[in-house]
Image (cartoon, rainbow, N blue to C red):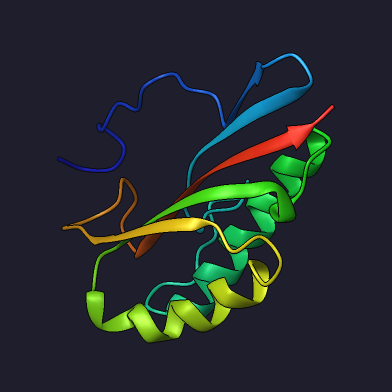
Length: 125
């Protein structure tokens, strides 16, 4: 199926759940695609940097940061890129040290995007 014909569902990039004195923040899986559709095909380090910067902006909009991340899930189209993305991941999660899952997948929803990352954060109000 061509990308133009592929229907994408309606979703939010972020969902904040009030827990009283804290907030639970879910950030949907992010890929290396900006508002103009530009990506860095086959450059996993650039894609990973772009995604972590996007997640950081999304969290900042909710009054949170990457330091509040308690869980990260990373989907890779090629597990051989694990060490490359780990270097980038470790830089962004130096303080948070979240629990993490990394899984190899066949593809993301956009051709050329070889990694997708979703996170969960907890923020004190």
